[in-house]
Length: 636
Image (cartoon, rainbow, N blue to C red; front, side, top):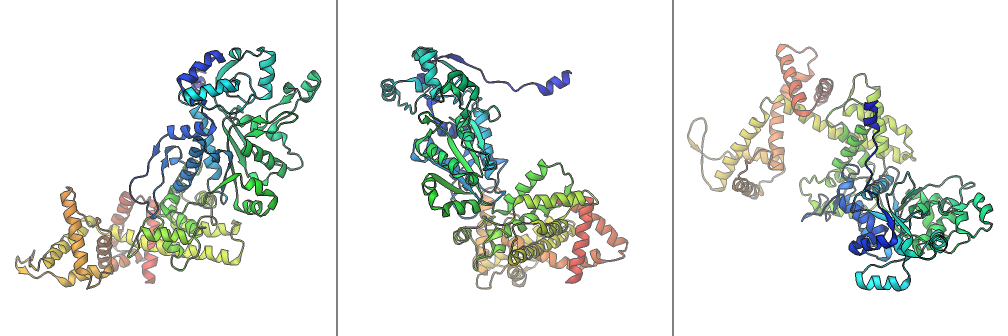
């Protein structure tokens, strides 16, 4: 029982406070932040979780880097610019700008993290109101958890504005007006005030509204309804205590209102939201407009949004929405992180071989890129991820984004990919999947993929699988080749040292001592060109390439760093290509042999051990990649 009690121990509640308005008012004078509105409260909650201002320079894709918010870091990947847009809109509302009179509408394909973003904002606001900095106070017993400052008359409000800068907006709700007149005899000082904590589950400060059967759902879901029992007691429908102020808009007052697939709702409901957005008031039953202060968040898919825009009768509501498009992630490394997170959250367990998630991510991303002659999908895959080869630079990534504004608004969702991977893991004879398994599972998932509605789209997805397969083949051969070199780093460093010594001597028009004979000889131009040719350095450009390399070496020495073969991307590529070329015959013979001899078996054991120790393979997928590379080399 004691152990059970430990598990069931309630979360610590924040320090409660109850008093009268006369006792609460000095708190406001001492801490004016208590008077902040919903947008300011949410913005403070976001910042309290931590924020990283953008550093100087550009993001990998050439754009100005956005701010990064810690509350999203472990949940959402590749959407930093979108998240920064959302927070900046909330910040503008916090500053009192007119954007707080808008419905912030997130539009994007299914599975693009729209609802996750809103859920994280709701959970963050709940947590913040439990802290001393996020304390929120309300008139005790008010169904709309009303700001106590609404008790002040216009004269008092004007004085408060002049002396403190606090601006009070809105009037008492009908219930509080009735109680002030009847329970407290008009004496605002006696009105009870208490601290509240926002909770979606307890229906305080946070509400979620979703469309349902239009024959059943009506505006009462938003604004509340008549209490028939109380109506019999009070006799008239206009009596405030005869009305249940329990609609989603009433609940969300001072916090967040979330509209799920909002544009699927009936027009009657949408125009109720228009009044809230535009006038910051709720039209309720037979009462005057009721003041409401909340962050209106909604999300929908693009097809619904386009239908909404096409309807002329929706023009008024369109003018009161602020649209932020939430595309699928477009960056390769971030897509891998998404899958790692989703797999970690699932109950499916098993080993995932290196490059498996990368292969699945590449396929999904290729389906999300628009066709572009200058920047085809296979090139965007690397540019958007900050992998710049040859003549490509960050500016090219930015140009590609500008030429393809709809990248990420369609394609394969992370849900489909993770479903296919999970099924492959469940079906595997051993608890391990490798890239070929993943690509096969993704190919089979096309039969269940609703996004490939045309033959052309289906063919494009199959072609993307072939594109990924080529990338994987290249990586697999290099990985196995690297494992065949017993001291790969040492061998690569030896080639680097030889090249640097000769390049330096050639730039000085000097000779170099032969390490074997000790004689002074001319630099081996043939050796240097054999490396430079591998990475496309022309004879005319060789001097500038060598000079640039020497500058890098000198910079490393000044910083006290060791210049390694992989310190220069192009030279690394050349050295690896040289080593791999020297090993091709040995590798082909060893991994392709049907009946390996004792030496070959020993070498294969060593290679497998290196794959497991250095590259993250398990026994099963190490054997699988060796067999696969043997198959590839036999075909060459």
